[in-house]
Image (cartoon, rainbow, N blue to C red):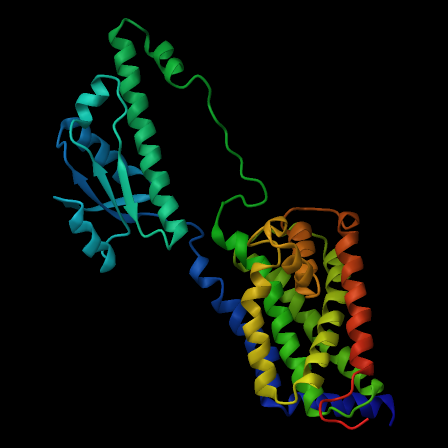
Amino acid sequence: MTWTALFKQELNTLFTNPAVVFTVFGGIIIYSLLYPLPYENQLPRELRVAVVDHDNSQESRTFVRMLDATPQLSVAMRLGTETESSAQIADGNIEGVVVIPQHFYRDLLMGKSPVISVGGDASFFLTYSTIAEGVVNAGNTLGASVKTTRAMMQDTSMEAATKQVTPFSLNLVPVYNPTTGYGNYVVPGVFILILQQTLLIASGMLASANPHNGAKNLIARTCILTAIYSVMAMYYLGASLEVNGVNRLAEPVNLIIIMMPFLLATIGLGTVVGKCLSRSEIITLTVLLSSMPLLFTSGFVWPSSELPVWLNTLAQFAPSTPAIQATIQLNQMGATLHSQLGHLSQLWLLTLVFGAIAMLAKPKNTPN
């Protein structure tokens, strides 16, 4: 069979398989639109909190107003006791509670540090930490105001009193994530994983549909899928990140150099999976079940150095692991291509290994 006939055959196999077409085209487009939506606001803001004020003094009321003025918090209600907040949090009316102790004002005047209690649902860690951040900011502002006032009462000028309270100013400059937003942090890495998982499913389904095809069919199929996913990768790493406000620093040619072995290795691995698992629904289920483990062992959600050695070693056999690290460092951190030679070499090694296995592996239940 000529190469032209082989390409036509593989194209026909791809486009006449509804599951593959939906996975390749529908899945990629749908994921790119839906996945970033929850992180559109980047950071939680105006989280609703209840206040329990046991002091009910002028200074405690000032503190409550400061809490409400922070960008992190919105004082939604005032409660009489801490126990009332449990039902409000459970019902979703508030995200947290701030408890101002009795003698709050007196302790401030005496130079003591009153203890402000903060409660919230820590299962939403980003929400909980934002509530704590808002309370700390308001507390620092109020504490600085009280200390400045006390110093001025001792005939210290306002400028000197302010310097005593804040002897230095802190200029925080976030690196690589200017908004410190969750979307900028998680979307680029997950996009690479989406490309891998959909490509694994597509190549696995095509391999299982024609398990006895030879090396030429595999080459033709690889060329077709690589061409299609090259366009998808450009969309994910370019236009889609741009629309979602994620910074892009890499030169397109550098991303192409990384993505080429990534796509080839993924197609090879998908072909191996397709030959080992003959039923398409089992292929889909297996790939989907592997998504979360691959995400959390890829090194950007949790540092690779903190993973068990055996788990980190196992994760290196997934093309997404070096690809995620390389693309994030190139596109979001502005690294040079030379600094990614290790990841690039790993991807090409995986390409050779999975490609060789895909060529030599016999389909399941096929006699020798």
